[in-house]
Structure formats: C-alpha cells, structure tokens
Image (tube, rainbow, N blue to C red; front, side, top):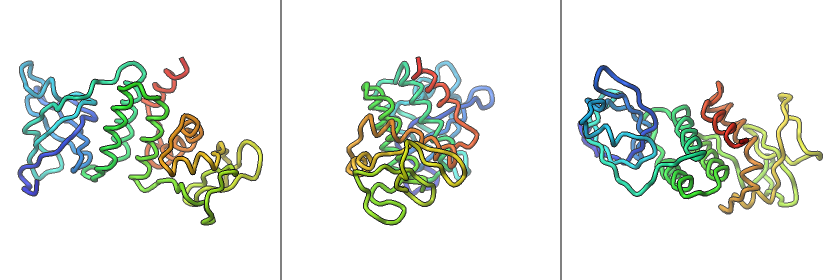
Length: 244
C-alpha cells in the first residue's frame, strides 16, 4: 500500500465516462484513497474483464498504479454479497453518488463515510425506509466535510432541552424557538423547527422516521449551501418519485 507505483483498496464506482475508443475514465470512491479517478484501459471492449465489473453500487477490490492525478486501473474484482438497488431505491443510490462527486475532493480520505455509504446501500437494497437511509447519509456526509450538526448543545452551549423546539443557524448552532411553527433567519429565509427530543435521540443513535422528516429541510439547505449550490439533478428525480 505504501509503494507509489502500486496500490490496492476497496472501492465503489461513482461515475464513468468514455475515454478514447476502448477505455473509460472511472471515478472510484475508495475506502483508503477517497474519490479517485482511474483510467480503465480497454474496458469498453466486448470481452474485457473490466466491462462487467465496473458498475455502480457493487463492492470492488481494485489495484491501480501511477503518480499522476489520474491513476491507471490494473485490476478490479467484484466482491459480491450485495444486490443492486432497484425502483425508487436506485434513484436514491444515484443521489448518494452525486453528493459524493460534488462534495469530496479527490484523494481526500474518509473511511467512516465509505462505511456509511456501504451501510446505506445495504439498507436501500434491504427495503429500509428510503428517507431514513438518505437522511443518515446526508448527516454523515456533512459531518465528514466539516459542516456537522451538534447534537448535544445549543448555540449558547446549553444542553439540548427535550421539551424545546429548535432551528439550526449555520455556523452558530441550534437556536431555541421563539414560538410558532417556523423561525425567520437573519438572511430572511425560514426553516422548519426540530424538536429537542428528536435531537437528543439522534445523539444517542436512535433514528426514526419522524427525525428523518424533521431534518429534511435542514440537510437540504446545508447541502445546497456547502456541497451543491447549483442543485442536484438526482434529488429532483428522487423527490418526483416520492410524490408519485
């Protein structure tokens, strides 16, 4: 792993585009190397061993070499054990990939986020509530990028009160509600309230459908601010499906 001419890692395919006549440029999400672009030489050839392996949402073991930003993929092996998501879950999985493509810098390592991505895919394939799966991943991604939420205390450093409602003010923290269903933020926008009891439950790892629903406007705003200010196509597709 320390040889700069040869590296091995566990990975998932995030995106791929044609390169020259027979090859692909593939964006991998690797556990130890982060988001990594590689050239898969000959992968478009009908009998290439890479052709059937380099597909999204499947666990791979890969080897690659090179010192430049774009490495050369020398081997990819399907590890099995995970079915591909389908139906609405497939669009949710593409949403995860788009978030990673937009949010991660190349070769910025996030092994815990890799594990969360894998767990989220397992949940989507296994029929777990899609909103719950997606919300947990959004929160984990924001945490990995340095925009995580404080689940223990409010903006004044006081312990979260389970009997109080809160609104998240970016770069400050949870602000106790002044009453009503929404609070007006300093920039003139409004956001929905999150119950203190839900915040404390999440801090304990106790996720629920109610928590996922309450956090949706907040994670959407934070992602649009810090990850994808121009929007996400996969979110548009997914939310259209959820309404049908």
